[in-house]
Image (cartoon, rainbow, N blue to C red; front, side, top):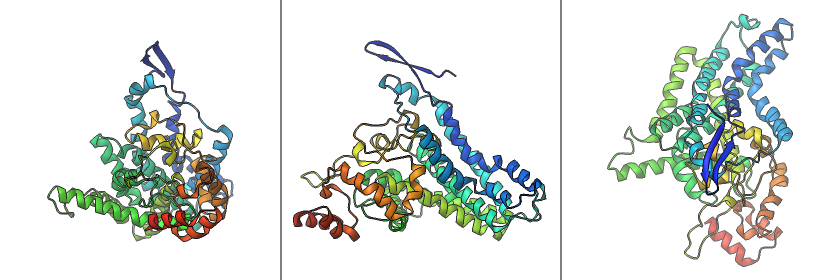
Length: 418
């Protein structure tokens, strides 16, 4: 399996090497982390450090909030874009899709293993006297939640493809978090309405993450149901037909967790709730930062302009991109939704985040800090013109006054909110 890719240009053959080719296997760190830390748990217990033995169960949050931000700071932006001449060959190299496929069996092995650890009453083989205490259980559930959040991103990569197998694999991957409707809403809703007030998954300027979270969760669910209802009506079918992709995706989650509860008992319910909610909340944190404050303008006919690089926040930080399959090259993704992750490019004209997603997810939880970091970047992106910003209705008057908008612009924003 060569690392060299050749392509033809007008001047001859171009040789290009994908420096990240084998680094994409780092995407398997998250779904295998729970297994990897077990020897550490055992070693701490053998040394009599029983409190320290609880810490490895928090491996998911540790990776997300500490390790990845530190690595992004250390290694910085990537900067490597594939040349046009090799794009087709790179796109068709099946090695890259196998890197995402293999995520799934490890994902579900970790969920089942986590369910066992959460409910087991005798973990003497790990050095515990009985089962896990609640500090370890909560860390375990959150770690499996991080796995679910990254799993949603893996499903996102596969769900955009035309191959039927990959579409079903996307729904299987989403089953862990009960977020199967994302498969519908993201592809047929978000990509149509992105960076407009009508899109529940596009955060508005001045909107806190805690306001955005319920709006996006409920709005996405509602939109996915409406989209599938209309699709089935056009086909002459009931919205309750088995081919409703929202229903069959949810059915996967119900069956999966029903089997787990049947095996491990009702004591597993807190594990399921914590891991699922934390998993999809991570997705929504990413949604929040991907389009915060950005707005597609309207043409004279009243239609929104086509989505362009300027309508998505980008980050080219290398390490988080390796864990998220180039999700941070978000502008190219919206311009070319079916393009595979290995060919996504960092595009000119896209506004850039100050760091990788892993560094900024935690920041979204603290609105004053988030606004201090991001609000001035939104305004700089639009050269100080608040009329071009997607402003949250709650703060519209205050923001308009702060940035010097006249009455005409305030009326335009009011009409836009309506």
